[in-house]
Amino acid sequence: MADLARGTLSGAHRESMTLEQEMPISGYPDLKALVQAGFFHLILAVIIGFGVTSRPLHAAGLLRLKTMPPVAPHIAAFPRVVGGTSRRAAARINRTLTTAEQGIGCSEEKGTWKRGINVTMRGPHYLSLLARDDWYCGGAYPDTNATALVFELQTGAPIDWRRLFPTSVIQAAGTGPGGDDSEPIKVSSAALWEAYARAVAVDGAQRDEACGKVMEDQRGGGLMLWPDAAAGGLGIQQADFPHVIKACGPPETLEMSVLRKLGLSAEFLAAIEEAHRHRWYDTAKMR
Image 1: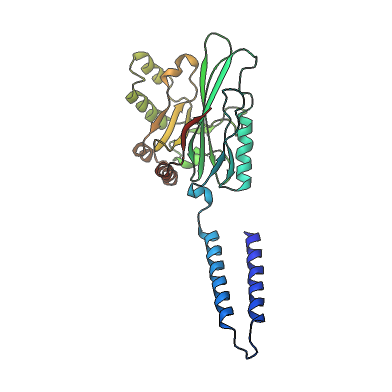
Image 2 (image 1 turned 120 degrees about the horizontal axis):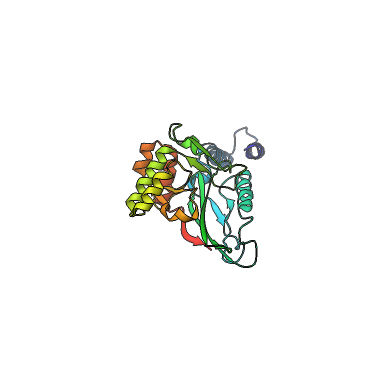
C-alpha cells in the first residue's frame, strides 16, 4: 500500500505539471487539459478506494493453486499456492505442505503406498486439503489414514478451531505432542463427538452391535475437521482409531443446521456456503 501511495502521489504530481504546462497565457486553463486531469483523478480515486475497501482476492474465491508432480509413483503431492493471497501467507502454506510430504512411502523397496488428495475448499478465507493414504509395507495387514490440513489464507497459519466455536464446545485443539503445522489439528469436543456419532449411526456404520459399542467406548476421542464445500458442511472423522476398528469411524459431513446449533462462526459458515455456491473445490482426487 505504501508503494501504491508513492506511485499515486508521483502520478498526481506529474499530472499537475502537465496541467500547468498547458495553461494558456490568458491565465485560464485549457478545457481539454482540465477534462483529462479530472478524468485521471477520478480513475485514481476509484483505484485507491478499491484497494482500501474491497475484500482481498482470497476472500473472493480467487485462490490459485498449482498442481505438483507426484512425490513418488501413486503418491500425490499437495498443490502449491501461487496467487490469491499475500506472498508471506503463500510461502508459509507452501513450506508446511513441503514438510507434510516428507516421510511418505514405505521405508524399504517392498510394499505399496498410495495417496490421493482432494481440495475440499479453496477460498474464501480458507484453504482445505484432505489427503487419504492406503499402504502396505509388510506386517499383518494394510492400513489407511486421513490427513486434513486447513489454513487461514490471511496469515497462512493452520486454522484455529477454538476461535470458530464457542469455548464451551471445544475442550482442546492442537497437533500431537511435538507436532508442527504439517500435522492435522485434533479436536477434543463432547458436543462434536455426539454429532459425529449420530451422523455415523444414520449412515449405517453402526448397523452391527460391535461398531455401536466402539463408538460408545471411544467417546471423547480426537476428531479431525475440515470444511467440505462440495457437500456444503463440515467434514468430520475420528482421528485416533487403531486399524482394527477404523471401519467403525468413517468420514461424515455435519449439515449447516447442526453447525448453527453448535455455534460455529457465522463468518465460517458463510465462507462454506459461498464456496459451495461457486464450486470453489475440486472433487477430482489428485493422484
